[in-house]
Length: 298
Picture (cartoon, rainbow, N blue to C red):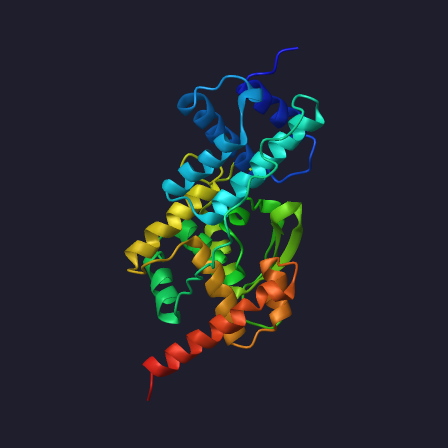
């Protein structure tokens, strides 16, 4: 039996493996995208046709091209994981006798530089978006909860519970069910600022039969990439350099640690499995405190 084409092998993997696993939608999209880029490299640059023509050196060369294009190490590590999973599946199915990706080495982990907005910066960001109700609700929500942009895009109306009256009274809070990584849900608190911003948005949100909370002007769900671009636009308008939507997550965590919020509370809000992952914000909070006390000396 002849070996399948590269396209056919990828389609078998997507249909026979990804659909059978309980993977988050974004993970499936990333896997499919990674394999699409690999197929383009193998067929258009190397002119291969069938999957049994793929050699280990070709995959090494593919990683080199990703590095040359300036792709972050974390993204290249994900590509390696995708490629290994793909070829392992083909071996398990008897399509290949061995995996050419077996010895494929991922790049070393990079030390992530966590950008944290100062109090002056995040207040300036909120000022830049104050006249846009939907966008203001998104940025306020990211700042007040620390959720990821993909998690923000996935929020549905049924995930939100708001108090009848928004106030700063203790216990008068809302809740948000967050659909996190690996299909792990968590419930986070909505403080009065987040509740106020969401109530303002819900008052003007189109009354249509669409469960997703945040909508485009065409009344379609607002995607993760759109949220990233939206935040980037207001960061630029506010004159805040070298920051992104993910910086709002770091800002939430760092400032809460700085103000004395218990580390385990921050961990639960962020959806971290281990307290060790969250503990990096202790050092960042110290750096922020040192910087602010030095700059704002009396």
